[in-house]
Image 1: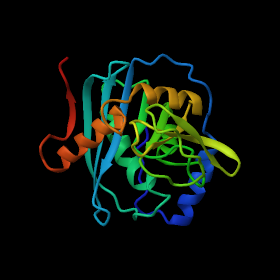
Image 2: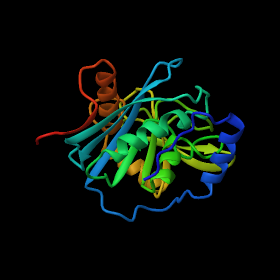
Image 3: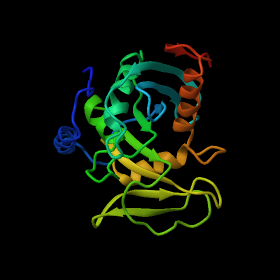
Image 4: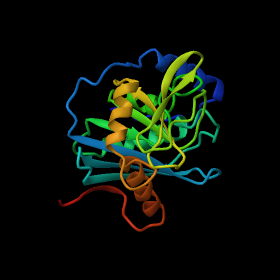
Length: 232
């Protein structure tokens, strides 16, 4: 597994990398079994170089935590919208390397191909780690859509430059939707189907919700760095 370092990269060069990686994205129906799903998230201050990254493993479809990996890393690439993967993927890759078993699929708090250059963090990580990924974001980055129906599980296509790049999914009745897009080795319909199965009591689906809570606990010093197995 590669150790990625984008600390001294210029934004112009980051664009070239995104355009190059985009050629390696595979969008296809799911062709693998799914018994372990993971959620990934990052916690950092926008103007800080310290990044707290975490990946949590869950059994699927019951979504019971199995273990988690946490990494604290100094990252020098600046906070630039549309290029957050260059801050977030290197520490997430380190957290990934610490996992004694890899999940069948990783859900990332961010976008997949629903990105101006089709290279959101889920796609960037998926191609770099050669693993299936889905992006599930709280806010829109690009594209247009019609508001989905107000009931849980309703969705509508997310369209960018006349291409369906994801879906807008209602995870709770009359609550703001989330934005789902394939990252790598999966397609839009299967991405939406899987995220629907990850809906719990909250707006944010369980893999990324639990990852978010975990990295915030880590940043506050409440849980330690490294890999921790959880008893079931």
